[in-house]
Image 1 (cartoon, helix red, strand yellow):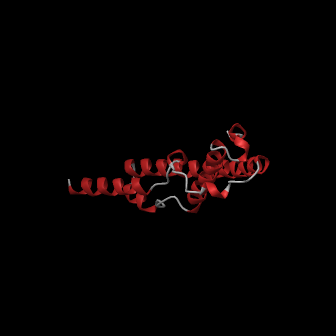
Image 2 (image 1 turned 30 degrees about the horizontal axis):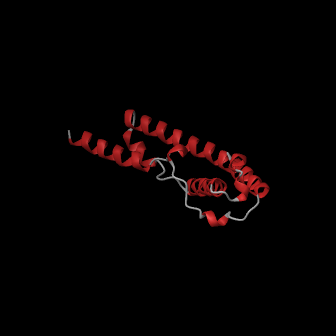
Image 3 (image 1 turned 45 degrees about the vertical axis):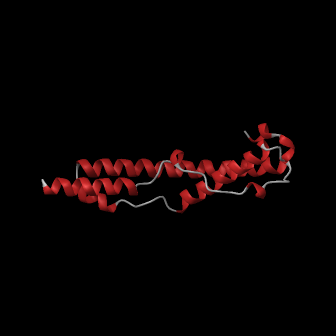
Length: 124
């Protein structure tokens, strides 16, 4: 009985430390003033560059989250001491993903607010 409680407590603490799904990450804060006064063509170029990088990061983060979930499932079912080998947290890729997502959000806010000649549809 005591062993099952220890295993359950260890498993719950490890779930918190697993890599996050990219879709559940909150964009980092980027002030809209960064993009105020920037013309639409430049915003579109920057958006395209950021979207390319975020798609690569998203695929990598999704893969890490899936691997963590699989390792957690195998560890809980087959060999619980293996759970201690899981890496904790999201790491620098997740921080970069959140920062870039915040930049995209700020760009859209500037366009929706009338900046860059109000051409928000170009950034959607």
